[in-house]
Length: 511
Image 1 (cartoon, rainbow, N blue to C red):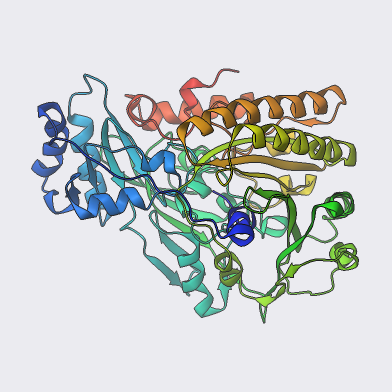
Image 2 (image 1 turned 180 degrees about the vertical axis):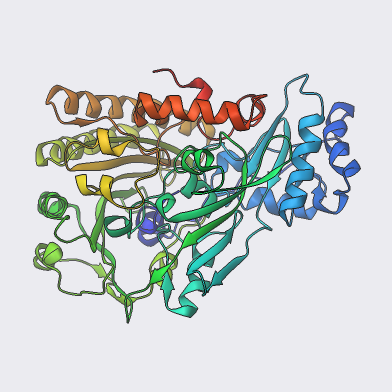
């Protein structure tokens, strides 16, 4: 659920070959394993089921973005090709006794930074074959399969001069990003990706297939707009499209020396404060370090979605020297696929939101320098990659889009704010554990500083947080109650609370 610049930073700076986790397997599964997988075969899905000795299985495992997910090897993987097969697969697994310790994972694009989309003990439903993208000119919508990635979506709809409120990294999956809300370069004008979903096709825990839209199952429709993996398996997203800027948007990636960080932060804060007047402008600022480059650098992804090349929001950047700048007129699809990063690293992410304030940004920069110095001692070169990512969250984002999501920004976003993401990438599990402890402590210190100065924003962006954080609680008490009610209505036996571990579970949220 990332965008192009932070994911591409290490690759551009150091051309790092991501560490891959070798897939190794021992003996064939013992009897309890076969029961779950045999249930799928008995449901007539043998052609869709693969085992650890199969190349299809190994290809699925290797295609996960995070090494943490690659390290998990389910007893078998099923790759359905249509909604009926998803229904049959889920029904077969749900009817199999849950006794013992086994789970059902659901994978969309496979780009989660933690193990929310795979299991070691159980079965993974891999949606990657359900990746169709169909533009419908008569309705101005695009129907997107749950296994599609955003690069595929834009490749198709841009043939018709259209665009959509979608992700900012071409390899990110549609399903995970959208179910978590979905920040986009178009958010300033359109809201989040979830706001532009007009209909969801969903397989419920009992195997029934339903539509969720403004007129049919409207409570489920709203709950899916940020409610994560709590209600069923979404198999298709029907999204509103709109005309792309003639000639393309204007934007790209700028790299500059770290010594310019204060000037960049000042420009970034000003962009957020004036964004309501310039909603076409958006920017992502990244402090980036790769141990092969020895020094941190600054990456700025500056985009004007209307195709304006001389927006005043970015004028201060032109006065700063850069050693890389690929800004130009281009399509959204080109922007998000030009710089992508191969998977294979272990990832630790934590996220916060705080007021758009230069003092908070300076504290963030101070903590970045402190954390980098500590990690350089603990994690040997070339295994360390550290990025701090800041992106806009101005007040007017709460009023964009349909106003029918469950994110709760209409009450929590009281000030122009910033979404902050701290990200450490490592090679080994031991390094990951060290990085987790250090980044968690840094996050807590930054959060405490914002709170002590009365500049904390309570909301958390679900797609960026650490699994130890509690994003749904920040949606507000009313929305939490609503999500609990919807989950109980559409999944009365709690399958998606107890047997499908991915995402953030509403049953674990207390308000």
